[in-house]
Amino acid sequence: MNSENSELQEKIRQQFETGPYPRIPLETSLKEDYNFLFIHNLATPYYLKNKKIIDPKGKLILDAGCGSGYKALALAEANPGAKIVGIDLSQESVNLARERLQYYGFDNAEFYVMPIEELPQLGMKFDYINNDEVLYLLPSPVIGLQAMKSVLKPEGIIRSNLHSSIARDSYFRAQKIFKMMGLMDDNPGELEVSIVRETLKALRDEVSLKKATWKAKQEDDSEYYMMNYLFQGDKGYTIPQLFAALRDAGLEMLGMVNWRRWELSELFQDPEDLPTFLAMSLPGLSVEEELHLFELLHPIHRLLDFWCAHTTPEQTVATILDWTDGDWQSAWVHLHPQLRNPTLQADLLQSISNRRPFEISKYLTTTSLSPIYVESSLAACLLPLWEKEQPVSDLVERWIQIRPVDPATLAPVSHKAAFEEIKQLLSDLEVFLYVLLERST
Image (cartoon, rainbow, N blue to C red; front, side, top):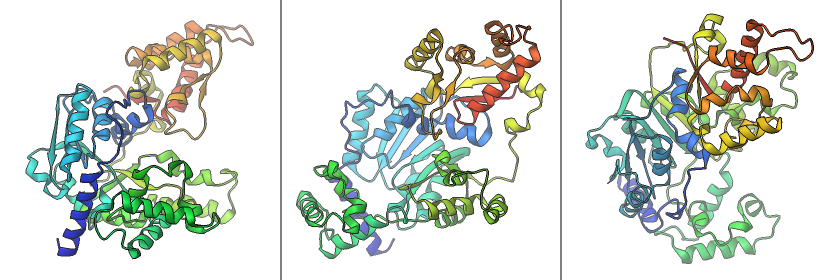
């Protein structure tokens, strides 16, 4: 690392040493933040990659850039029985992270002060690596990706992200202004924050920079200024640059963390009636091209948040679209771990009792663009999943008991008709990962 990069990395370390991120109070629990836990649950990317269920017990999970430990806490909460290891440049951040996990009773956790480049010195191989809000601070993202790859098990998964150069363009312009003003020559503090605040408030409301970045509700939030206007080492990237970094590091893209929010077809008024040229060309786009087109059309994502893994020989993982009826009849149904909670179960029971549709997306909105409802009697079929996984065949039998006759004709419901209804229900829910389906081996 050259002297300029070394100096910048020291500024970054000092910034987090004096202001560990995120500044979330120790007492703030995330047990009911189901969306946050969904992202940090190993079951989510593992199922997307392999269409299989994984038990987190005994797994080794790394939080590379743990900060004040809020993400490490999420990893511990979402993956019961896993061992959590955290690293960070900042000693103060590591101290807070260790204290946070001890506060919540997670004793199977270790934290170390070290840069990401030195990960091999831990002498550990990880099943899952969480690397949040770090990669864009390195001289090159490839450095961080290669370091994580070196300690990733063959079947392991990495979650990481880069700042979007398009979505954050206004903040990068602001940083240039405040660098010109000398506010980032050293480690910014409250004085520099007050100058930024005074400068932005003095601008007319219609000034482009103020319209794009100023949030009156965060006027007194010092962390907001530090992590946006005065963020040392902040850089942005595009989708093509992300894919280039993955190729250089010898890793392959698995998908975006919030993949449902990157649906290109959803940008059009009628996805089923696209302009002729687009209708002909879109199906031929690569994943990289499709994501890049999305960011050019609609750059709403601050983070290019992705999952990746070791490159492997090209192989096709069978999805439920490829299943035969025999596969379905012998398959097992799992509720996503973040839905298996007493609050949601109580809501389901109330929906059944009141004969009102059950809003299954209410507690897990990450993958759905709009509310998802299940008709109350069909929802009653899902109840056993809150206890344990169920064979599809058992859910079919339960459905026949719940609705033995066709309400229109009063004719007995055939086993085939019940099977098709349950198959359709599970197919609809699997799209959003509310249920995870696994073929019997």
